[in-house]
Image 1: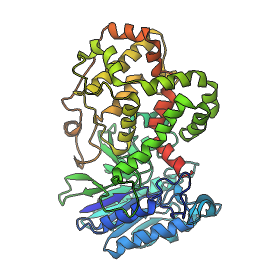
Image 2 (image 1 turned 180 degrees about the vertical axis):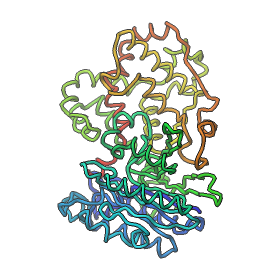
Image 3 (image 1 turned 90 degrees about the vertical axis):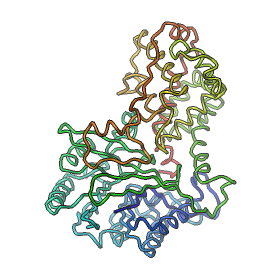
Image 4 (image 1 turned 120 degrees about the vertical axis):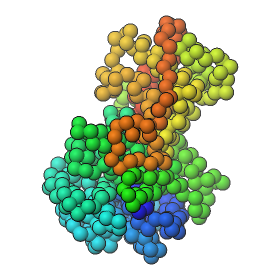
Length: 520
């Protein structure tokens, strides 16, 4: 069986005129192309949609996306949908889009969602948890879809209510007794997509009690789950104390970079999950400025961070307004603008050759070795890391010079902080050191995020053989030269300290930047 997974369509009705925050303005055109591509795919006839189907719950947005789902059904697809927190507003109105632009518009209330989407799952369900609008559908080849709505856990957070947890266990027992393989889908992630998200997003942008939910699902014979929300393409895993494997397969937002969805195959012998990323290649009926869809969406993605870096070097009041999107207080920026501004100017001018020069003792590289990257701007390197958080598979490998220079530099910063008895976790709770924050972002040591074949119930050794870091290691040499040079070049040392909060938060809180574009 092969099924398609899409998430976070964030559909909104295209206004007659472009408005600030309409990102992407071509949402309808991108979705139309993506749905045509999915409709014409003869390999998969099941489409799973993991929530946030509308931009802000606008009634007209629901009408529009429902028509797209019906289009798939007309082309022979089975479509199963869950909604999420972007899809309703119980006041009956929201700040959102209609054809006249952005403003206060009618919205669906949560209770109205069940009837609106019952033709996409609930009408075929063999079991329904009505309070949460979760349901179970019998799929072909002895598989059952568990469509689990997590928009309210009954305690003011996104997650599973106590009653839903009990219901899931009962349904799982029934599925196992009848020889059914469970395919679970929810919206919020159960495993953080990266180490920074684990530190900053665990308490507000993860499924509530996610560690307990992972343990319960894995120890009940469920080895994976399909999620969205982060707008990141990621495959992360863990093993419970009982050595049971659990994998979170999260899919990027369909209308944002990299413009992708997933196709997953479960062979008849149920031996594995064959995960494949598909990119939208169907022609877009919109002016993308001569760019491919991927490049167009990348340009939109990096624009936000580029603007923040520019403002840090040139316009502190502007920066103070921008940082609200990444949960920073404008007052912090204004108060510390005197130090942020010169550091911002320095960062905007720095090139990788500078870092290569001050880490040669630790990397063992000659200037000739990194001549090809010496003129690359630090800002561009940071943006490339940011982009890879969404597309997955950060690929600055340990045998490459980007990795070697970065690991040596952050190791020297860590040594300098240690010598000064400065503990990073006082500034960033849960952060062991700078290396543990930065290195996982430049190289994905875990499972491939885009295309991978995973045994359905693997051992730790089997997973070890699938990891990207197999046989690839680099540890910078421990020398005094780099630390002494770093200590004498105070501005360079400061680059990774005062500017760390906005830089790290910009990278980590990428999903918040996106949600701010949706005005919510």
